[in-house]
Length: 244
Image 1 (cartoon, rainbow, N blue to C red):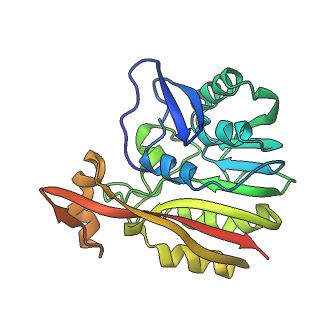
Image 2: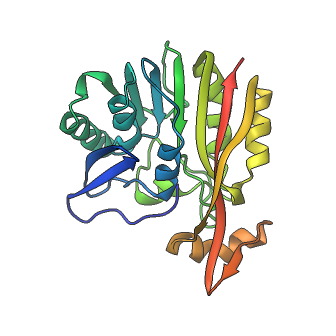
């Protein structure tokens, strides 16, 4: 999830891709959709009749979009109670409240007996030199929503271990990830979990202020940004894993 300042007051935005767009209300202390979220939305498959899950749903952007696109059910998981309240309001505004099921929990502690046909996720992943161990269940600040520890993978790695057990046979997992946190490592972890994997889509984007501020540190751990017309650029990708 790329860094993006939280709203200081309620504001209304539109989210979605192509002909499928939904209204969203974003409030203080609630992470708004970012360019990462938008890219994931652009690469969603047909979800008609599917049971779906958005890990780290925030304001409910992807969960509500999935429900609006025809999913039979759209579960949304997050640790931020304020975000979940806005997700509920957004589901009501789009007329899909009966299909959106919201849970307050860290994914590692979530006691869930169900499996899903489609799971989507835009995890915290900005490399964070100043932090030690993050506790997402205790900290749902702006930083916790985007920062992924020293290598950007502190939340991502345990998430990739948990996901295969949440997928139904033939189910698909889609995750949006910055190249600087290592696509190949993520694909390998999903492969080790028994999934058939691919890099589904990729595109170059301009670094936002948070990533730009961390660029020196990110390059110190091995990534090289492109510099074009005074701007830093890098790639984001949508990774796919299908349970065999």
